[in-house]
Amino acid sequence: MSNLSKEPQIVTKNISDNSEKLISHGKPKLSWQSTFAGLKHRNYKLWFIGQIISLFGSWMQMTAQAFFIFELTHSPAFLGYVGFANGLPSWLFMLHGGVIADRFSRKNILIITQTIMMLLAFVLAFLTFTHIVQPWHIIVLTFFLGVANAFDAPARQAFVNELVPKEDLLNAIALNSMMFHSAAAIGPAVAGITYAVLGPAWCFVINGISFLAVIYNLLKMRFDQPTTKKIINKSVSRDLMDGLKYLKTQKQILLIMFIVSFSTMFGLSIATLFPAWAVKILHGDAATNGLLQASRGVGAVICSLVIASSSKYLARGKVLVFGLASLPFFMIIFSLNSSFILSALILVGVGAGIIAVNNMANGLIQTLVSEEFRGRVMGVYSFSFFGFMPIGALWIGTMAEQFTSPTAIMINAVILLIFTTIIWFLSPRLRMND
Image 1 (cartoon, rainbow, N blue to C red):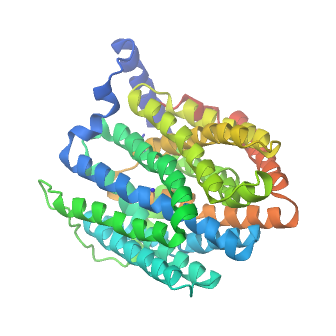
Image 2 (cartoon, rainbow, N blue to C red):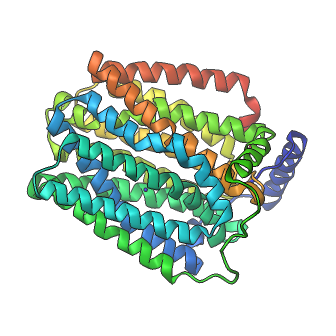
């Protein structure tokens, strides 16, 4: 599975100008064509098709691997260890991955990273088929998968800007979210059934094969201008420091990234406990775990479609804050129930809230950032998501081990509620952003 402005005064003026334009155009005209506007561009269509197939496989592996780990260890804490191993490389390499995305062809970077991910999936399948797999094998392979992702994510985020013109950028970002979470809605459900019938190894094989789609479509892409970047005579560290100095002046971007980090750590991290929740709370199996993951994906897809349909007319700051506020509400209800149907319905809301936060955050940043620093800024943005996911996984897994899964989710919800209240009162300008 962009740029507002460089000075606060200019940001306010641009927002005001945009608002006047929207008013002059009258009511938004929604249509099927506007919802899928990005797909009229050949390169983006290739990207969309290849990615949705690959992401389907990735969600199958993530779902099967989490349940497989729980079967091997019967430990919620170990679920957190695996999540931590996957995210630790984000702290080590993702900021440098942003520099690489500014220096080299993003297309070529993606071909390399996707190939590495494919090989890692086949190695895990082999170890599982031969019955020699141990929990530590999964942690090591997950770490290397995280390394590949640390270089893949910044290039992937910045690559969208090369696939569509500026007027369709926000639509393409929304379609990216829809593709990711469509796979999240279908992949886990199929993984649960495949796991129950054939075992986890086949889920890993399917994931490995699915990478061929995105690699093939990347090779088929053609650009009017070469996408290879000019390598500057600066060290990677110097380039990184230049990017961080630029980012230091962008207060709006920094605030948005902070929100993404916090919502990931205390909101999205509840997915770490789905396998334990399926078994201990709902008394289910691998299929139950898959359906919980799928329910979250359904909510995200619905929200992504709404955003894609109205991407040119949304008050993005308001949607972001509303999505953030919805998360603790749904999490509290989720922690208090033990019904599968209610759990699934609540997770639809959780998925919608998460996508509202992340999609609006991505769109605002992509419209704010200067092209010169796009890769580095998107590297920091990717870090704000992937870097705090492992900490959240380790935190909530440990809390569930010490107390219970419902208690751990309730604690996270309360923390997120306090944070949302602070953002609401101390950052009113964010709600004004279009």
